[in-house]
Image 1 (cartoon, rainbow, N blue to C red):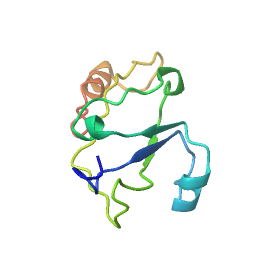
Image 2: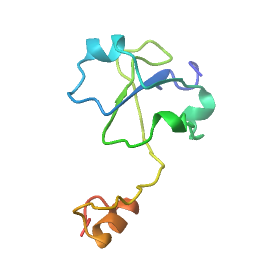
Image 3: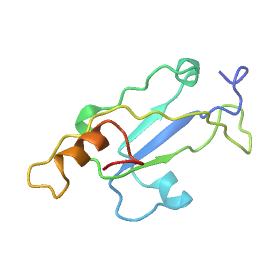
Image 4: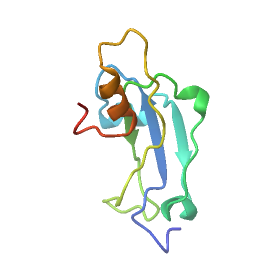
Length: 111
């Protein structure tokens, strides 16, 4: 992959539900929820399956990209798609319409 996309990310470190923002040192040294080594197929758009049991009840997700295939100063990413579903919660203060909008991914117009 280094020849085709030298500035494409080589790996991802995913952190779930961290109470505070991570700085670069913490993102490199703390235990990640999941670490993923990428390949050319991933960079071409193939989905990257996550370990389902690790990503339940996600409130926030931090993505750290430690480097790229070419060892360059800048890493290029054209898009990130996160595929999942929102599970409506009983007793929530959100209306059913709001929960449905969020489940569709309509983050800008949830009501």
